Image (cartoon, rainbow, N blue to C red):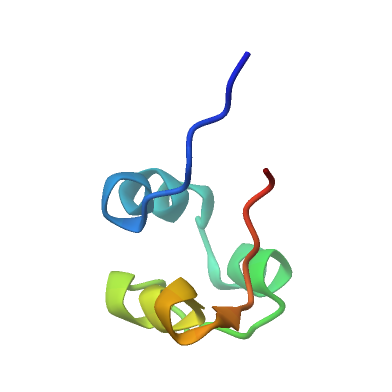
Length: 59
C-alpha cells in the first residue's frame, strides 16, 4: 500500500469533517488553529514553502 502525499486543497474538506465541535477541535490541533477550522488558517500552519512544520507528513 502506498500513501499519497498530503494536498491541502484536496484534503481539507475531509479533514474539516473530523472536527464536529470546539472540544474536538481543541484536542485535534492542541488549540493552535483558530476555531472554526478554515482553509486559509489551516494553510498558515501547514506551509512547507516557509519551513513551517506544525504538521509533518510521514514518508
